[in-house]
Length: 391
Image: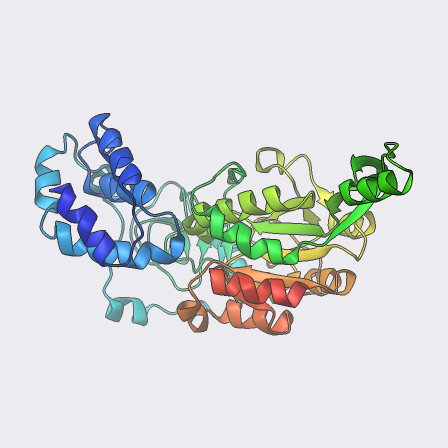
């Protein structure tokens, strides 16, 4: 069955070799797909595709060959999917019903209403359109729907329309050891490198040594030069948590590629937008952070600034003091972004959100305007454009 799939991939233009096909067979023999259609898909793609540019060709060949095979995997599965049993109380509203739900009328009205409702409500509430609870249409609570609300007691984002999150959340650090898919990113980032010989002369200059030895009548005359180093400095600011959970894998690949290509790389995290502080470790972000002003004083203007984030949030987070979903920011996020742009003239914003969806988000349009159009998609073509802008 898989032999036909192998030749179909070759026919589709995926340059798969017999050694990679044997690797897939060995992985299947060891049970790595665990009788799951989805796991088998990712396992096969990992083993057989060396270049991300061929993912679409692989998908088409996979669909053509395994059409209808999902039922077979379903029979082999031993457990019901966990998500079938979760969130049974969530509200399933139609588009028409969602369209009828109106926002309270703005930021100040929303916060005042929350304050009043916290004072009035006693006990847990489920459903409905007023009290703080679950599975309803109230602007306050969890697992319901409101186009402009305050999220309280929900484990992760769902509709991504909250203007405030009343829960303390823990985010995971990006893994810079991820290798899958980083090869092409490394090739794109290498265009930004610039080498110079600095430091003590520790490397043999072979051509100069031969020339000097010949001129000295055959007596060996060693000539040394300093080692070549990539002198480009990169300051990488990474959005983490919330809607960025959808892009963790791609951002890890970018982070891993950047760590391997740049010796002078400094990275920090932020959530949704840049404010007065950033942090290096998400596990200690509430206790250990660096002020944005201190960061600009520590790292000189010769650093290339790269911000990575989907820019998908409430516009309040960008334009309002106090607009952050997690803390009270005395100044709007836009002010801090402009300060960073002024401190680092060479900057870009890389957005992992598919470019076709950018027009659907007012906050993305706002960030593009703030960054003077220097927002690029997290694709190979987008990275090429971003590197050109940084060069």
